Image (cartoon, rainbow, N blue to C red):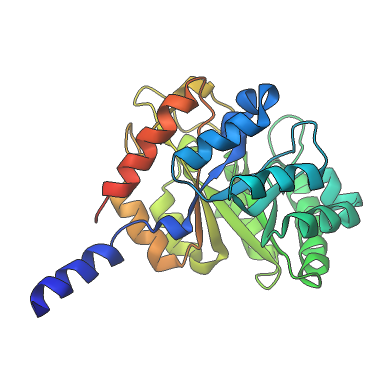
Length: 274
């Protein structure tokens, strides 16, 4: 009996907890544009409870929060624009309080041409300031990786500069494993290198034929495949993420067939052991 209990405990420890798993709602942006309640009902039907926000689909924050409450969905984090972090923190704070968010983040740093040192240093200043102000309101700020940040710089990359020059007390990071791999980087090595700076993670698979080593931050959305499929190996990634202390895992599927693929991703996560 003792041995079987030990084995069960080990299996549970080496799996992805549903309590830490959610969905980035951008995955169903086209569905939300047509039917907010129906889309939320579908998400609930998949057995999900946690969500990450990216807009409110022509509803006010209060209206969208009410819809989330109706379907028992809990908003954990939300994405807001770089410009809002630069000039309108009051809006973010107000919106986040309506939703009861724990984290607020920035998914894209605007830039013309290749991402460069000047733009990176400007973002560092914006993020440090925003993170400090948001912390005073009980919010944790994060920057979401999008691939273009891995431009070579000195002995490393501009992402290394972004990571090392932002204040770890106020600036966290969300690893999007697709964009890290798309840029030719190793998600496991980055998790090992920067540890607890990684608080959140976007989960998605990458089609085997997807080109990598690109620093554009852009890829055909059809290159998104279910978690567990394609060229990204997941067991070592989850081992490294658990060791780093990643708190939240959000499936993000930008493909045109996300409705079909998300349940496949969830099934994989339910059965994954490492």
